[in-house]
Amino acid sequence: MRICFVSRRYWPAVSGMSAYAENLLRHLVRAGHEPTLISQYRADRAGRAVYGGGPPPPERVPAGVEVRALEARGEQAVVRGEPADFEADVDEMTDTILRLHARRPFDVLHAQYAYPNGLAVLRAARAAGLPAAVSVQGGDGHWVGTCCTTHRTLVRAVFTHAPALLIGSPSFAAEVCRRHELDPARFTVVPGATDAERFVPVTDPGRVSDPAVLLYHGRIDARKGVLDLLDAVAKLRADAVPVRLLLSGIGPDLDTVAARITELGLTGVTELLGVVPYERAHEVYGRGEIFVSPTYAEGFSNTILEAMASGLPVVSTDVVGVRDCVHPGENGVLVPAGDPAALAGAVRRLLDDPALRRRLAAQGRRDVERRWSWPVVAGQIVSGYDNLSGVVPEIPDPPVDPTCRFRAAPHLL
Image: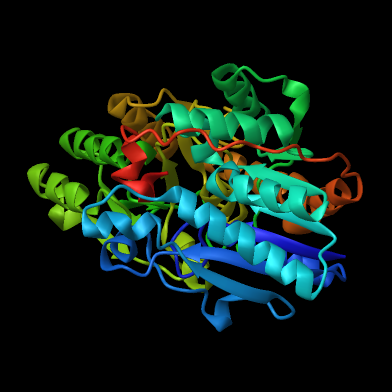
């Protein structure tokens, strides 16, 4: 099967979705399929500073995958002080799919993100008469459509007309349905996944250092609760609980986080690791002893799965996309989002109970192997391709709403 996979961002962007895309593509090749990757990227300094940027480097692309890199020039209009032109980027993605299809036909199109990629894929699917699937990611449900009338119209059109909508968790599907007035039957739940061969336990979770090492690995973004984590660490230190914090990643709030570290007096106990290449991410998990993800919302958290696969006990928040994989008392601990005191209390509970740490970590690893490893999940996605049917109707172009906040900060879309 020839599959065109259209990604919002791919390596060297720092994103869990880059890891998701790479692993899916690798397993498609292993299953005998021929995937083509079309990926947007930011080439400007501002875009690279937030998430990383540039075309997919050859060493990050699985063997057997054809690549077409598309610079997001419409999005980069913000560098000139203009609103982001998402419409131009959608047109370029659509045209690229159709040109490649004319040269050597695809069997199926698959978009990663409903907007803008899903819109481009559906327009190409209609023009070429191809089946299409759209993977709904975090921003699609949490932010897109709440920003302006243009994007509300377009993302709902994608949700309504895509032949298949894949989504990472039941709680995320429920939120998207409530927000966009959709029938839950529109969605097929295909969970997130991780590489259980790359991420493996390397330490005994029952033993911790003095001070204990807390790990955050992911985007440095206030929406991921990083500032709450700093407040929790400050509380632990004030209560004479010896902990250190490793913060791994980059993101839009890196400067804010650095300033808060200084403000809270945490400079000596916090280490900012910056960008960690995916092929070295397992080394970062090997340095941690308790993984903390204080996020405000997810589609499905890749980093939590990586931590579980790495044998770390997990503390996270009882929010959409997390409660589907972290089950309190079974494979992790959940606290309310935005509550640094509760976060500190959960960490302290784990530090005080070595047996609990071992039990949660062991169950997390078993859950990954059984439910959230790539051979399992990739098989579900390919089965979805086989069942695709339906004709995509025409999706009109609504008037551009210049008030959309993402036209001024498109990297947050």
